[in-house]
Each structure stands twice: as C-alpha cells, then as structure tokens.
Image (tube, rainbow, N blue to C red; front, side, top):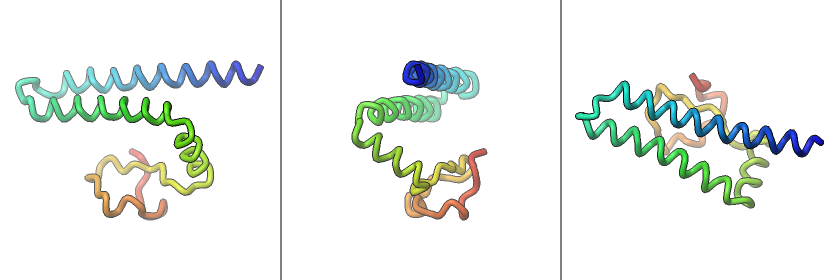
Length: 102
C-alpha cells in the first residue's frame, strides 16, 4: 500500500504547510505593530500570496508535473537567499553563485 502511504504523506505535508503559514501569521501579529499598517499589510499580503500560489500550483496538474520534472533534473534552483532582496534580473543565476536557504 505504498500509494496510500504517499497519499497520507501528501495530506500531512499540506496540513504542515497550512500550520507553518498560520505560524508565520501569528509571528507577524506579534512582531509588527498593527498600528504600522503598511508593514503589517505587506506581511499579510505575502503570506496570503504564498498560500494562493501554492493552491494554484496544486490545481495546475500539467504545470506541476513539468515543474517537478525541472526540479528533478536540477533545472531550477531551490535555494532562497532570504537575507538578500529579491532581484528579478538575477533570478536565473546558477546554483553555485547563490547562497543556500538560511
């Protein structure tokens, strides 16, 4: 029953992602003064956007399969240098040039 175990794992992973996003929201609520609406709203928008994009990816079966193939073939860099600002011009840098997720 490998299929059932894999399905159970997928559901567990999804629940863990939801818990993690909820945790990020709770940290945002504690860390950012709600009176500072700009940064608070930016944080909420980013967390909501992450979840919405995850759901869209999951519902895009063909696109998700192509993404998985690219990930398996190391065509996409998984590293997210969180300490650096996002630079769309350098999005396609090689893995060796980017620092790992911290």
